[in-house]
Image (cartoon, rainbow, N blue to C red):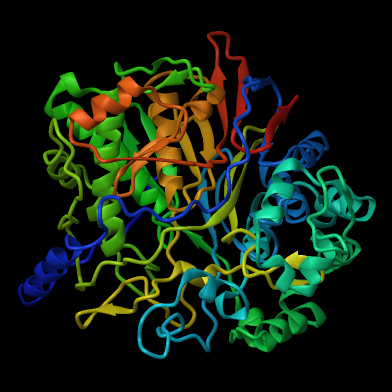
Length: 609
């Protein structure tokens, strides 16, 4: 379970460049400037309770997907078998968030080892760093970049799922697509959340395929409860079930993908050669210690694993410096909000400040490590995090500057691009104790709005920096052919350090806020001993190195005033997480119990036996 990371040296001649980059990094992102939410909120359910099981459990952002996962587990399937079935169904029932036209990061525990699979999209060979610049050299507005073929990267989720299935799958590949094929042919009822997102999307009418599928003849959105069938997608799933992922990456489906991307009025360059050449990657998991726990997450090109490790490590360093600042005693208190609980003001202060520090480093240092040397080991080193923790005081620092971790090799300019993405999350634990956490995405809601044979293509290219350089210095996350864009996805597995036993699998959608959501949930479960449902339902909060963000409508006036008294500029916003978590416990007699929760802000559930 040990993560092996590359460490880079720094030379004297690079110091002036790095100092200039650090100075530049402190000059941007006004404190009240916040990117829009990646997906609209659709209410907060107050009727959820922790689900319990003894054999296996699956959780997903839609109940039909969760049931598909349990169907595989009941047939003796492994955790990755359940994840594949859930992803296929999510392609159908939650098309705004994820699908086979997108990408994913997968953390997998096979009972002996942790595996990290990278199915992130890649930039086409024809992409250049000026992809999202207008003729005058200024960056495009986000919709101008998103809608159409320009934003489509080479999809990766199916290749990553295939790689993981070859290692730990128990059921035949074809069987995993049976629930999705059945639902595609027989139809499913449009959920309230899907209806709300269709109704709010002003670009659907511009896509004839999407309009025919999601809208009535008069252009109005199809009503909640409407039976939606997708025979074209059923046919695609049948081909994938029979031929494997090659059905998507070569042949007629690949030809149509390339044709629609290149022929779009906002054309992209994705080609058949890009699709044929795509490969998923097995990465070295990023595992760090937090108190009595071992926390494992994704390495680059995701920034999620690094940032979560930094936040937890910084909190631990704050406690080591001053035990009175230990996070564990700062337990949530009862509140009158729909959530029923809210965190203590001092806990919000410490976690938000740790988040500021992590996001400052993220913007400067993290990108695809095959193109950019990322000082991963230095960023999560305890001595570095102790230095960063020393910057946290009684009052908010406002805007944090990036630090200088060991291993910097090249000076980069900070990335000031918008922070947004639309994603979904699945978790599962199987009969053998294997587990998966997979975060999967098409980027913004409904991706690029390019529809091919019943599924949507991603707009993942917009996760690259729109601005390739600042003052002559390159931005680490700039567009380059074959490169994977930086992500915030943070699928996470937690283990007991002493016994090595799996304790939890957790993750969330939510764009760059994923880091806030996963960190909150981990602290709630590991430090405050909340059950998974209570941890997930706890109001969201944190900072992305701007204002301190509080989930709208779920925090008391007293807490908000306490934070203002500490110098926090507050932003009350929708924080539409989609956290799924399963916790595994063993009692004194050795009996294992599973406890699962799903996010009240979306429509998913945890199911098990």
